[in-house]
Image (tube, rainbow, N blue to C red):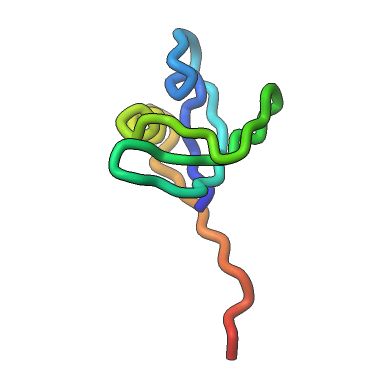
Length: 75
């Protein structure tokens, strides 16, 4: 899934809304893992606390947007 988050919240900084789509690569009880594509400091499977990720996903203007991409289905 691709999820729209407020990167300002995820980076734990003060400032204006900074919409940013991220690709979720996994999760566990306490954390969410995602590909941080940049533009600065890209990082595969970046780990963030689930509580902080949900806060960034629920930020005003994100509308909890999620895009699901599926490959070709087998016949």
